Image: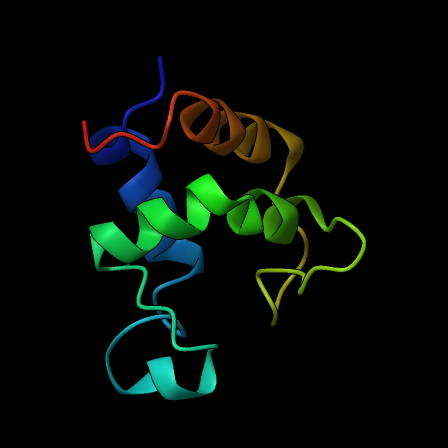
Length: 87
């Protein structure tokens, strides 16, 4: 089972929070992914899955590097599918 504390948060810190936190939030769609409430809302809305999977009609993330590997995407998707809990 994939957990927020053990996998999701470290992955987001590595790939996402450089743009989606602090003073950078204004230029990143207003999303602060260090705020769990915002992260959970984005995950439950389908926006996070669409972004990391590079789905049509979504902004593809991470923006400044290659698409995440399939195993990382699968793990994040499994966490999202469980309701994006803070565990």
